[in-house]
Every structure is written in structure tokens, then in C-alpha cells.
Image (spheres, rainbow over the protein chains, first blue to last red):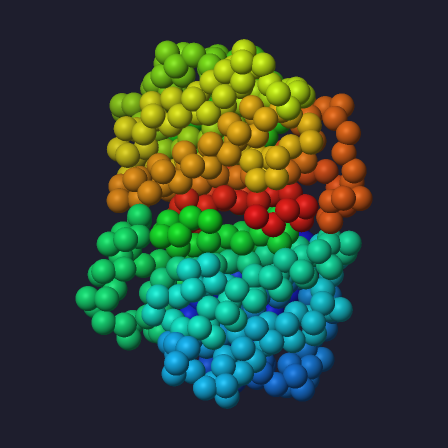
Length: 237
Length: 249
């Protein structure tokens, strides 16, 4: 029996990150939950037998401190942190734009840069993009779409850079998923959306976590720089 | 090496075309070790594949068919579905059968017709024959094996091969769109350079592959098995690029 794989899940205290942390812990992985909400991270960690660390991905020092507390070798890094924003061009001021890019794009870069030296040969990085990266976003706005498109390009760049160490870097791009975030959307709006989804429903966080788990697996070792859409077929590219 | 995930396809009936060798054979094994009963279809004898999956604790059967013959395709699908206990059923279809050869840019009519007729028309015929079964299965899954050449053109095979593989992507998406309301997932994989008998002897440059090695059939078979599993229940109309980082889609 091999040793437990050590996997860090950034943004692991809620939503897709929490689902992923739960699934990994249940499968016997050694999970570290890193989240801005240190209390929520600690509570989930206690419930699933994981470790928790507080960090703010928008703050380079905070990211450096959090990863300095981890021991090599790390098998995997999942970066699922992010903020949603609906601001369109006309209503988006530069401070808000910078804030969204800092969390959704620069935050991913900072976490990956900090984790890379700790990753074992043959390790894994999985990033989270969004349908909005390809569609420009329906409900979400300009900064959100741009940040998520940036994550896909960052993923491909890192895939090339880390390939010589057999570290794969892939991305999961969810469509509309039932999370506390989308629960706030009006029911009628959700129904309109579901009508255009071939599978006729929102996805579940567990279904996104399942794709992340696959990319973390030994079996996915020849995929790198790939994006797996988990969107019920609403966008096929 | 982590233990292979087992059991999540227990009770499912699968048909894998092109199962005598390469990606098809590895896929048949990957599905069988997860508990599916796998019909291994090929124009060549698939006895070795069957032996391999039985030795791994799996079950299946062998079907001889010709992808270029629509009648043969339909009979193969019915034979596979007939393997189910308690009435014909097919839960999983993997279309890995195909032909290709190194040919000129200005392909001859006969070569064009033969390759497009098998790869594109034959795969359509397979999907068409399997469709009522996949629909009845409730959570039917289909995976079509296309190629990186569909996106980039190909160094080795002729235009008829890459055009046929590009056509398969439209085919997969069309069936994904229309199968969604019935809960059917249809996806594709686009392998890069994979060490199979299909490409044996063709030159490749490992330095041009970021991960530094040719893919193995298992490198494609495992992602296919993922797409056939409940874990991929919200994934449809997708193309997974499996190429070691050569091309990102």
C-alpha cells in the first residue's frame, strides 16, 4: 500500500473546493485545506480529518507564508479559490477589476509558484476555470470572464514549464453548478438556463470534484494542459 | 501505483470497437476491471484481448465485424446488447475502430472513400445502431476516439484520415446535444502520439513531446474509462486532448 498522497486544496472550505477536499479525504488522501476563511477551513478539516491553513490568495506574503508551512513532497495542488462578479464594463471600476484579477488570476499564479518547488516528480496541479472563459459570461461580468480565460492560459503555460518534471497541469471548467453561490439566482433564471443545457440541469459540486479527482489520479498521467469542461454540454469546445 | 478503481461499472454492458489491439484493447480492459461486461469487436480476432481481460478478473465476449459494412455494424451492436441478462441492453459504447495509412496529400478516390467510409460513416452507423439501447439504459455513455490530427492536420496519415477524425467531433457533439435530454453523455478523446501497432514504425520526436515520452494505450484508455463512468455524469460534448502536452486544443 502506498503512502497517502498529500494534496493541498486552495479555496477548500466551501463549494467545489470543499467537495473536492471531502472526496479526496474519503479516498484516503492527506488533505490540506487552505482558505481565506480560516474558521470554515478548520471546521471542515476537523470533520474530514484534514489540516487547515488560513491564507489570502490576493496577498503574496500570505501565500508564501502558508506554503512555507507545508512539507515537501506535495503530490497535488488544487486551486479552487475565486470570487464571482457580475460587473459589466460600464459599471466596473478599476479597483474592483484589480481585486477580481488579484484573487482569480494572480492568486492562482501565486499559489502555483509557491507550490511548484514542493511538488514531487509526477505531481499534479489542477486549476478551476469557468464556462465564462469561453462564452464571456452570461450573468458574470467582464473581469470574471477575463480572469478565468487567464487561468486557462496560465494552466497551459505551466503545463509546458513543469512537464520535464512529469508534473501535469490541467484545468476543469465548470458550467452552472448548484452551490451556495448559484442558490441565490432566481428560480426562473435557473430554469431558463437549464432549458438550454443538453443535460437539462445544473451540475453538482461533486461532479466537478469527480473530474478534479480524475485529473489528480495516476491514470491521467498523459494529460497536461487540458481543460475538462463539466457543463452538461451547454458549450462544446 | 494507486490501486485501479474497481467496481463502478459493475452490471454495465459495454461495446468497444477496435478492441483487438491498441487503444481499443486497453479500453476493453479498463472497462472490464471496473466491472463492465465488455463486447470486444474488431475485424481482426480479439481473442488476445478477451484472454487479457479474463485474466484480470473481467468478463466479455468477442465479436467479429467490419466497420465499413453498415449491416455488419448493426449486427455487432445487437450481438453486444444481447450479452445483457434479461433483455438486450447496452450502457456503454466506445468507438475506437478505425483505419488509416500514410498516403499522399492528393488522395485517390478509392482511398478517400475507404477511410471516410469506415472511420466516419462506420462510426455514425455504430452510434445509430447503439442509440436506442443507450437511450433505454438511462445513463448511457458513448466515447468516440478521434485524433490530434483532426485539429492540427497530420504528419503521417493522409487527408482522408484527418478529415474523417474531424468529422467525428461534429458527430459526437451532435449526438451529445440530442442525447442530453435522455441523460446520455457523448464525448470524444483526441490522442496524440500513442505507441500502438497502428503507428508502429512511424517516426516521432520524443523531444517534441513536453512530457518526454510517447503515450501508451492505457494513457488513453483510462480517460475513456473516466468518461464512461458515473464520475463524468455532467461531462458531455467534450473532447479530451491526451497528448503529453503537444497540443492544448
